[in-house]
Amino acid sequence: MKINYPKDFQNKIEELKHQSSLLMHSMEDGSFYRLSIARRREQINRVKGLYNGLLGHMKMPELKGMLLATALLLSSTGCDLINLNHGQSPDRVSNNNPPDVPTLAHRSQITSSIFSFDASAATDPDGDALEFSWNFTGQNSGATYNSSTAAGSVDLSENDIFDVTLTVKDENGAANIQSAQFRHLAPAFTGSDGAATFGDLAAISTEPTFTFTDIDNDGDLDMFSIESTNYSSISGNDFYFHQNTGTAAAPNFAAPILANSAPYNITTANPMVNTAGLTFADMDGDGDVDMLHSEDATVLLTTNGGTADAPDFFPGRSSLTNFTPSAGTEKSVAAADLDNDGDQDLLLGLDTGYLQLHINQGTPEVHDFGNVTPGNMLDSSMATIDLGTGVVVQLADLDRDGDFDIFAGNNAGTLYFLENTGDPSNPVFAPPVSNGFGLTQAYSGPIIPATADIDGDGDRDLISVTYRNYSPYYDAYIQFFENTEF
Image 1 (cartoon, helix red, strand yellow):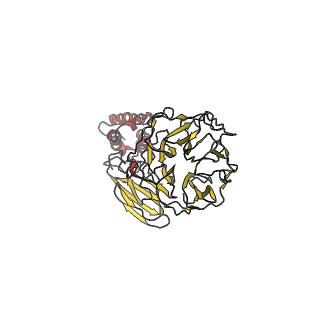
Image 2: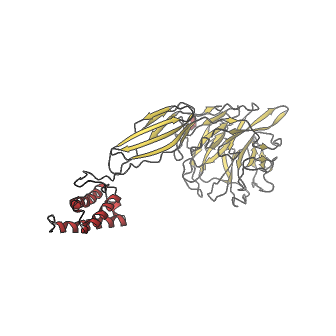
Image 3: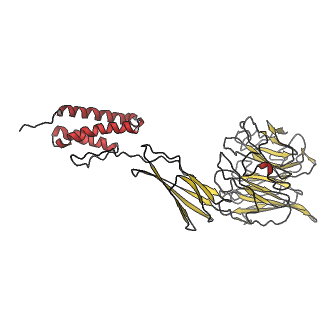
């Protein structure tokens, strides 16, 4: 029996072979995926049209294998043609791609319950219109908030952890789902539970500033302290090292020894004059910690020329390059990378109660702190915020959201917290909140705060010293408050 082939049958077979071969090779070498969506559709539709025109002759032995192979090829592009009935011709290609949505980040806020959200940067690779759906559900309270806008804000007034789900869907049903947690929790500090033991501080008889650092890179924190010398001159005789003889989880800080003695012999060539502030940070980017201390109207650097495992502090003092503080006596100094550019910036607490911010516009190797920058990092200018006489500042990521918050204490015994509501590259500090954590100090004298992960559980604890400046006591009293929330 003679088979009646369609008109141009052989030409259509050859064209299908050719177009299928072009499509397959472009998918193999990746050039197909670099085409615009419209061009991809054009290639696929060309093969689809030839395929559908020959589909009625599927029983012909010479076509069966080729059409099955073509169907599999088209299916690999996202077109479900294997199950199409004869004569059925879809009006559009079904290789719909889901929207591209920036990763939803975890957020933590303490002083403000208003959380902003923004997915307006989401795009659709096929050019489809997008729909947005936000859901906020409190883990403990069960409170639920919803929004169908790309960006906005929500008042998560409950003291809770909220599971956040963002669904971005295109008009053809393809969706991208992101999830994160927004925390609106005040940290809960409890009094010392024995996790940290501090040695006798009787040798420290005036207001100390103290700091914690892993000076020997052994995995636990050691403690250093320095007395506020009140217009006297010293040469290391009031600078102490408190060795941690315990572990990271259960530290035991031994009684202080002079820091200018073994094992670290941290000395200065000239006497320290009116010294108050002390901190350690990697100021030159070489992987070990250097020492900063505030003195009178400046901040001095003692460089560690050794390694993280074997520190070797150069004797003598050096001033920071391109550093010009404004008039005032620096009561304290804190260092952190506030703008996420890879070098250390400085925050100073003045004896008058004001703050000074110095952003390093240079590099770790060549500092450029420039002039003091009150800036707009606070809702009110730093230059106008008075935290009380003798303010001592600390920088720490209290809420574990990746940026640095400010703790400060003053001579009146007030503890301040300034939350960073910005991000690691763009800090924005909220106005100060005084005594917001319900802490009870043992004595009513000046409070000198420090923050560190004392018990090795991954969050920042608070350590404070109050100075008993009345007869018969003239010494420092240290307290440890464990962070049990974060």
